Length: 84
Image 1 (cartoon, rainbow, N blue to C red):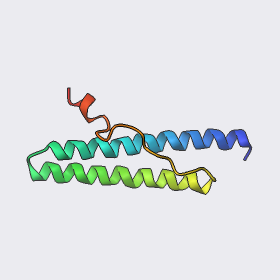
Image 2 (cartoon, rainbow, N blue to C red):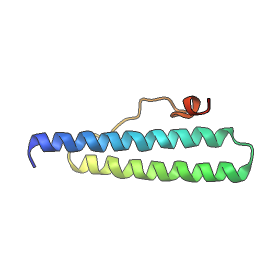
Image 3 (cartoon, rainbow, N blue to C red):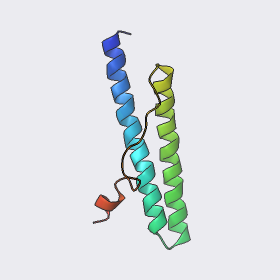
Image 4 (cartoon, rainbow, N blue to C red):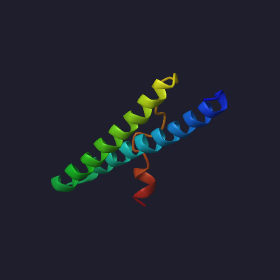
């Protein structure tokens, strides 16, 4: 793999990681706002799945020699913008 190919692959992996981790925070924020335990439980399950997927992408990035990505976004993900 050329360095250009590796750079493109890492950019794609980071974009996938970012989407998954933002989903994790979004579902977590939605779960905190729900009164019904059944919905809260379902949203927590979705958050956990998103976190798992983000961890897979981060692991692949580390395998390629990149540092572990760090989430610098809002801890509510997109929950505030999607709730309106």
